[in-house]
Length: 124
Image (tube, rainbow, N blue to C red):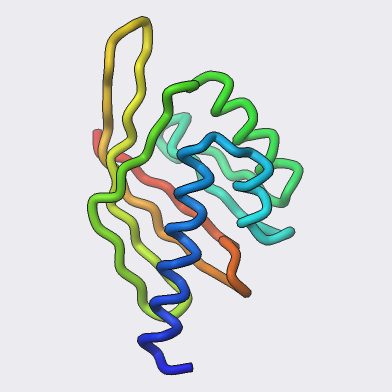
């Protein structure tokens, strides 16, 4: 596999992860993450919270989708270097009838076609 092929595979994995995320499919999200996955969320400020492993990841995503039933991420830009991927995104929500959004970035590591690390950061 050439380096470009590896980068394309990394981007494909992240795009598939984002697709199941936008369907709010917790089982699909967890199927796209490694057993030893690490997810650093954006909240609470200033450092977010780290979730390690399938059980912790599942608990986070289940609660997140319950609290944010209109959650949607829109990719602004995506690029990869080997097994690392950077995604610039806009997160959209509706709270109390009012639409809102925030921009941010994910730094993701892919291993064996799954997300092994997802570190999320926001502007503001």
